[in-house]
Amino acid sequence: MRWQIGKNVIQSIFYKNQNLINPWGVETSDTSSFYSLEDGIGYRYKVEDEKQIVKESSHEYGAKILMKDGAFNIKLIENLDDAKVSRKLELEVLEDIPLMDFVLRFRFKDKFFPTAKIAAREFSCDNSNLYHMYPTDRVELFGEKYQINLQVKKFQAPSGFEQNMYVRSRHGEWIVHARMIPNRSDKEVIKLCSKWFMTRPLPQWLTNFLLYFKPIKNCLWYRGEKNPFKSRIINIFNPNAFPMIELKKGEVLKWEVECEISER
Image 1 (cartoon, rainbow, N blue to C red):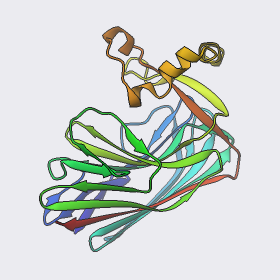
Image 2 (cartoon, rainbow, N blue to C red; image 1 turned 120 degrees about the horizontal axis):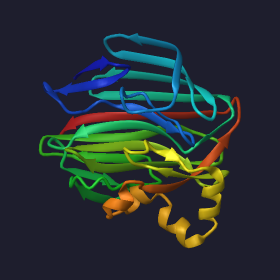
Image 3 (cartoon, rainbow, N blue to C red; image 1 turned 90 degrees about the vertical axis):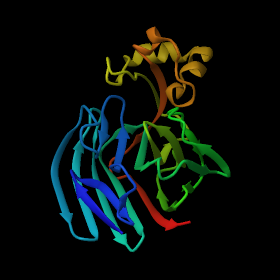
């Protein structure tokens, strides 16, 4: 097995001379900014002190990230060993910041893996873009020839975050996230999650007013992930409500996940 590193991320993984993946990444959001290590996806943040070391079987990346609401250091270490890739990710808060989640991102071509298994449930690739998310530490993908096993080895976060994984089928690929999300709310935000608004938040006073009404809150809570709006007019705005955790300077979030590829 071999890989290709480009634009700060693992771009390709060749197993039996076939590339099984699309580029992997790292993601997190505050109320307005969306940071993505994958090129061309994030917005409203700035990168400083960027460093990268690429070797034949190892990759290290680090940077200071300035978001709308705060700042953090990011550090990613990835290693290739036979048919296994290990990924270690750390976020250290430099300035107090509210975060919506913290994600280690994987993408696999579904032509090799038509079936996904998570939390004892199986799903077929259907391009629905629905999030099948559970508080688990394992995801498996299956195909006629190959199998993927993703296993969380380490999860570290303040008590406000909980460990989850999800799979979703979109545009001919499986997207798999090891994802920290809040188990309580220090702050709530409504974001307009469309290309017209680039996931901009509503003013906080308006968010607080709207979410005071329980039917509105229930309707908007993680709406796009669970039950996307069908109306074209509403999708111009695509409002979604999310909880946020207020992180303090010096707090640290960590992931360690292994991806193993095998023949069936």
